[in-house]
Image (cartoon, rainbow, N blue to C red; front, side, top):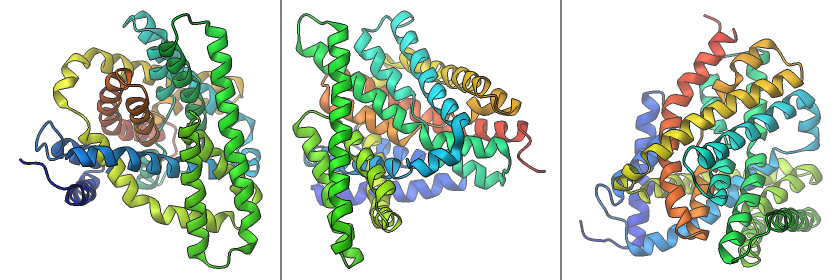
Length: 392
């Protein structure tokens, strides 16, 4: 099929993603799986109607969508929430994220013989989960209990750990590739410094919005200035080679903790995000060339299995250390298998900012995401049933 203009291309991607997302919902799969399938159909593997202009536009759309995702993650990260969740949940969330990251990194290093910077990138992305898929299963099964409460709390707070790990790993990769002689400790320190600068920038932008809020009268004005500061944060981060996700995560967290109109601000941004998310995930699928997966088959298998093992081990030890319920120790890892938004976003960032490496990582993560979104919900349902939170 001949190439089409960017407006028509974008409209087709949006509508196809929405419709196929609705169709897969009918068979109890997450909508994101449908968005990815729609993108694959419209991408180079099948219809091949992605115009060069759309590929360029995709970069802008992805940064905007990811910035909104990061802002919403940060908005859930409040001191009040952390106190409510308690130390047990925080231990579990951190250790299950680190467990997946460590196991995948080691698999990439010792089984697949990948360089350290590639292994670290795969490991960082492995930490993320997909809260939407887990929440969908909980609602469908009407699960209630200690296990369900712990599962929902853990999936809500482990993505910030993933974003921080990715910022460190991508900084390490960038510095490793740009210099001949590499001193790991120096590179690691500079990567940590980049994380601190990004969080500080987001905090300052958040304070600016907090100060401006009392002077803003209408909801439309509030939405406009918030979106402006989110995009400003992303733009400044890209300019200074920082993580846009960390900047906007810190911005969202600052608003949630310090602004008396935090709920209204988050609602204004949430009202914008659905069409962008549909486009973002559909574009992620459209950027995948199925023929490239033949050379990535074993890598994908190792990543999928390694991450599941890491989630199970990490959640087990986190629950054991924090003296959590026995069902949490046994089954929580199975509820953490789904993976989608943040992982896809980080893979896309790797593709855009680390040429060559990103082209290697992105298709593996996209294909793994499709697998996780197919097997994850049934495993989460099995865990809820075994934990006794689903009443027959």
